[in-house]
Amino acid sequence: MYHDLIIVGGGASGLIAAITAKDFGIDVAIVEGTDRIGKKILTTGNGRCNISNTCIKPPFINYHSSNSNFQFTALDKLPLEDTKNFFLSLGLPIVELKTGKLYPQSLQASSVVDILKMAIEDRNIPLYTNCKIKDIHRSKKFKLSTTNDEYKLFTTNKIILACGGKTAPKTGSDGSGYNLAKSLGHSITPLVPGIVQLKLDYPHLKALSGVKFDGYVTLIVNNKIIKKDFGEILFTDYGISGPPILQVSALASQNTFKKKKTEIVVDLLPNYSKEELENFLECHFAILSHRPIMNALTGVIHKKIIPVLLKECSITNLQMPCYELSWQEKAKIINTLKSWKFTCTGTNDFNQAQVTVGGIDTKDVYSDTLESKLVPNLYFCGEILDVHGDCGGFNLQWAWSSGYTVATSIAENK
Image (cartoon, rainbow, N blue to C red; front, side):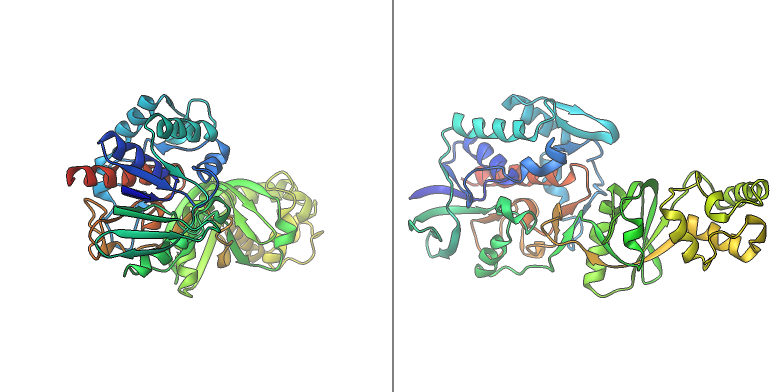
């Protein structure tokens, strides 16, 4: 089967690339390894599809790559307003919820997939599902062979690898695209999970498991503060989770992979400065001087945290009355409440991660077209490239912008 352009992968970036290419009159087809398109889209935004974010604008501080600034050109080619208009033209209005996150008005990820599927059908774009590409060979044209029992061979002048990363392998994003890229001469930067829960080395995690609170999280690498974020934090039996943890997780993942000393510092009482907390607890302990320290902290912090925190402060007698606390013990309690330090040993695996950190080395890719510098007429878009965004719709915007950039670049060079 021959098409002038074949897109390998029917995820977010591949679908927008196909729609845009067809609108420019290009003979384009999608080859998808699973039984249907857009599977990973269905898992985003807790099933609501966090489609983009109002914070996406120059200087694009929410995007990261080992080749800094690479992603800027594509994000400029399809900026936020144009993305909203693109989906509106397909019949999908976008609404903004808290903190700038954008969703389909229906608040259903399935609506995004349905709209994109209808756009593919309206344009009569051929879609080959259950076609996992095994090999790509290039002479005058690209030849793509499949792993299916029913062997298929595709030929094309141009190819876009939009296979995704390694996250959510059940949706088809299983890392196989990296092998295809390597077979064509491209190198891959180290791959680690991003937007993922962190594992901690701490003996009392089971006692803390299930505790939720709003606080600050600070990531420290080799004794240097790297990143700080605020939000709901959740202790688990393996470590720690919650939105602020997900925001610092990519850097934590990269640094634990490099075996660097990586620590997480938690502020349990962010509404108090250290001085304010000292004054509050001094007064609190004085009023409740005959009450056991265990009971005196009830109502101040989550009850499950109290015995663990006191052990962390080397206070083994939990029934000690407050008046017996030394100033050193009070100082330890205050310091722990404001800056409880944990050793980070790694992250949960790619099955739990939302994005792959790392990918095709972008030094070998033109930033304005996303065409390979090594193989003419080979293009990339989406998560397969070494570009990732923070949590909150940033990675889907990269998918939309990079897919659009590839398609328009090919159209301009027809």
